[in-house]
Image (cartoon, rainbow, N blue to C red; front, side, top):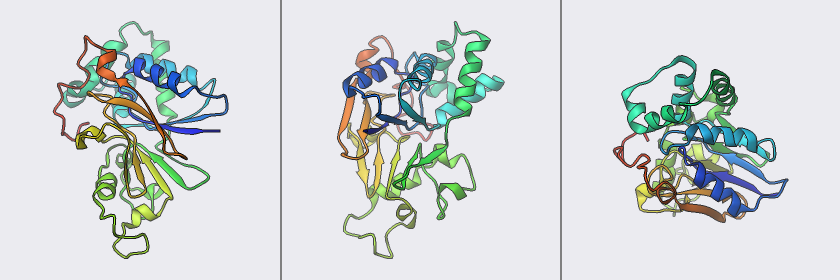
Amino acid sequence: MRTFAIGDIHGGLRALQQLLEKLKLASNDKLIFLGDYVDGWSESAQVLDFLIELEQRYTCIFIKGNHDVYCENWLKKGITNDIWLFHGGEMTIQSYKRYTKEGKRKHIQFLERMKLFHVDGENRLFIHAGFTSMHGPAQEFHESNYNWDRTLWEVAVTMDRRIKKDSVLYPKRLLLFNEIFIGHTPTTRYNINTPMQGCNVWNVDTGAAFKGRLSALNITTKEYTQSEEVHILYPTEKGRNNAPYLKIEE
């Protein structure tokens, strides 16, 4: 059995389909999606349809991202704001134009049952963004940190590699888990278009919402598989490339 962590999709159904085809999945493979299924390319609603069907054939775990929270609030309560609309929400709303109330209800139920984080039997954490509690995500005071926190990754990626785990200087949050797998912060911010490692943290968001690729990381071997650059698959669209690239709203 192989287990893959899959990065932020952002409405790029064609990239997701291409990626899964490249993986040549076996029936006992497991897929752990790290969140942000919507907001960006034109097929956000269709991505959710595809994933609902996919979990009928494979073992899947779905982590909820910050953009998925935006989408859920809109589907349930009609809540919008200018930040969300500018950062991909408008394309998500357009993707629902032909959906019935029943179709939207099915997506609400899917979003509601997504996990905020997952810890597997080998003490590996899967979370969209991060956590701030020194006691781990189960003790997190602000639930929004699961979807929004960047400090975990910033600490991990800037950590001096010479500092060992037994040092008093080593970040205590990172010692709570053998490995941590996240999305949320595109590696393309660092001019890297593949999954990145900082300490024991692996970032699998390789900028699919912008001009990057969608990635799947084998959590055991650390081999990765990628789609084409997603903008090539949507040649008439801009994705989130009009959004300010370094804003926190990513």
